Image 1 (spheres, one colour):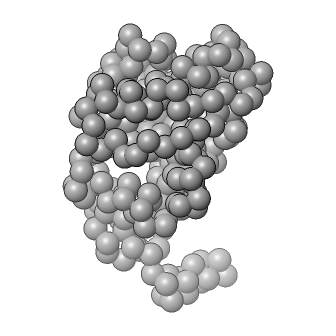
Image 2 (cartoon, one colour):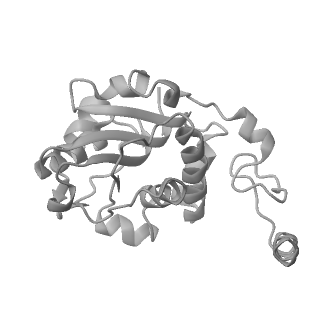
Length: 231
């Protein structure tokens, strides 16, 4: 009773807002309200994580076991505000809460079965200093909180950031992230099934570049998870 009273008091003093519509969240709602949760353009990729539109993005480019995103991402849409809030408006908790939400839904489909470790896509040091946190790490933390799969944030580092890829085509994105990652602790990942976590997957170039570096660990398998997927 005391905890519930404290939550109600905090919400009264500093009410939380829905990351999609901006309305005040009710008690029991975390990052998006119930109405927006119903309207979230879910991909349902976890229903068939081995053969879906996102998984096919990686076919022929990296060996992938499963792939799923929670929702379809489209710039300037209501659901895109979740990503904007997380990345550009200093709300790392949005990443963790959405990671938990996605993990609960995906776990019901067996998506995490057999996965040994979570590796979030790292940020370059200068980018991390600017933002203060890595949004992919926050998502991974949320997933780990539900699945208990450990997160290995220091397995690979990003040696540089070559600018936003928003306006780049697939081939430009591939060139932009090539050789951007460096393996730091590969021994602990040898023989593991690795879940790579990113915020949004569009062409998959960043994930592929990261996986190419992680392959140096030897005998590794990959699955990919993100919050958003761009058609």
